Image (cartoon, one colour):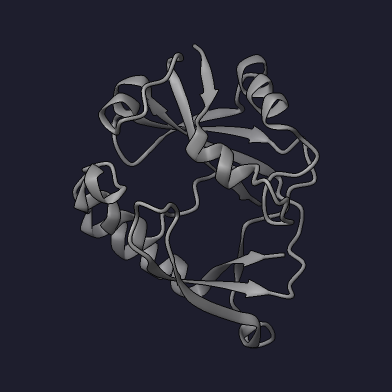
Length: 185
């Protein structure tokens, strides 16, 4: 099985201007090589048949991406309308500023099949393409953000995958994200 880091994921995980809330101590090339050479601890099914999650023990100093919201840190929450790319419409997002999360125990790599990548207009020369990565304390998936589920349901033309909303998964995601937020360095 071959894995390639997509341009979409590269821009988010390894931005030109390094940020503390992205992958640390690793180049994009080293990251891709590690995924191809080191078997995952486990493979989880993603939200659709074309999506798999490879769970790796964190070999970097990358910190957990989401943090529980508490009375002690609620004042550090920020929000804004943002788009992930120039082609997408901005959506409301929130995050912590001024927080020091723990180093993640696991990197949960989100992979899309070659066929799905082609359907979304991004053909790849590998079996799987990295579209994202979760930095977690547990070897499990962090629920997809509700807005991402909605974008996916809108279809490829709106930056999604065309997968309809699973109402139960959406409710579980709302429960998680109502009590957690990502952070920015």
